[in-house]
Length: 190
Length: 141
Image 1 (cartoon, rainbow over the protein chains, first blue to last red):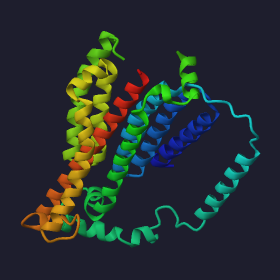
Image 2 (image 1 turned 120 degrees about the vertical axis):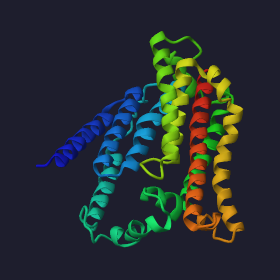
Image 3 (image 1 turned 30 degrees about the vertical axis):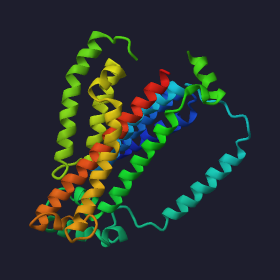
Image 4 (image 1 turned 180 degrees about the vertical axis):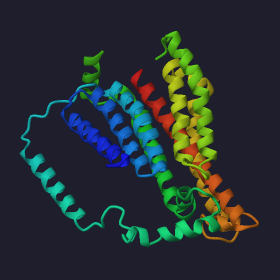
């Protein structure tokens, strides 16, 4: 077994353990910190798949900033998850059926790293062979993201912009006018 | 968050923040050659500012990056991106076709990618800093 397989298996095992612990926790502070660890492990997996740009984003956003912003959100709302009392049968059934459908869907997918998979035969060869002449920069990811798919990236930036406007609108109001529930949680923690 | 933090925390922050800011610029302008780009650079820049704010408090950070200015940069980045597209329309190409931006297509591509990555970086950094400011302000209200 080569070193890559060992790294992949250990990262995936840690990822699964983190996910299970995340599900069982009710303390939101611990949940946020563990989500950061989950993101960091995912970033490690992306590195082992040679997707360094994605890994970079995942580490910076998922493990770094999101954790801080979610901690800020917890400071506003409260640390404990409220206990749900209704039956668990329906959620479990919905999750099982969705998971079964998704796994059934993967049966039709091409095998991992199959060179004849549609994604490797459509536009990818053109990007790999021609982006050096057409765009002239070494990082193909940047060529695709900023030039070939520039319109998509404009859309993504617009999404970030819109999200920021939404957050600013939500948080700029007076705190007293918020629902009693939020206020009660904060009082409990102080 | 205005209470004074420990000496060690402040000194480590003083050491780390300039390096992180410099790294953000490296990621921004080296994205054509290595991993990274505007999105990652914006997040790293915001992380440095947020670290400073966590240690020194929001009021002191807002003397350097005032919320009223950061708010404008949210739109400036997106407008820069979109106006590169409009510029290429006026120079006879399609929307966001960088080939026409300069005397030869490769230089045009370089210029276009540089500008739109800068736009992405500005918007992402400003958005992250602004969300942190808003949350901090809301929590202390």
